[in-house]
Length: 126
Image (cartoon, rainbow, N blue to C red; front, side, top):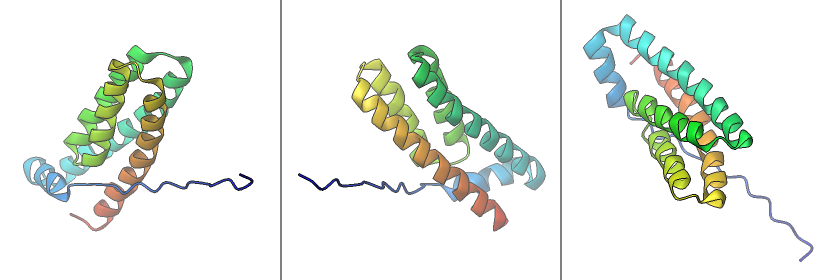
C-alpha cells in the first residue's frame, strides 16, 4: 500500500443553450444579456459563500444558498449545477455530513465549469 491514487475529477458542464435563447428572445438581446450576466455574478458569489457557510457550520444558511443557486442555475439553463445544488440541500436535510462534503466539492467544480460554459456561449453571440 505504498501507492497513493490521486483523483482529478472532471465535471462536465451541462448547459441548455435553448434556455438562453428563450431569455434573449423574451427580453431582447441587451436585456437578456444583462439578466444572464447578473445571474452569473450572483452564482459566483453564492458558490464562494457556500464554502464559507460550510466551514462555519451554518447548515441553514447553506441550504438557503443552495436553493438560490439552484434557482439561478435553472433560470439560465445550467442544468447540472441546478441538480447538484438541489443535492446539497438534500444532504443537509438528511444530515449526511460525508455526502455533503463530497457534493459541495462537486458543486464548486460544476459551478466553475458552468460559468465558463455560459461565458463561452455568450462569446458565440447566441
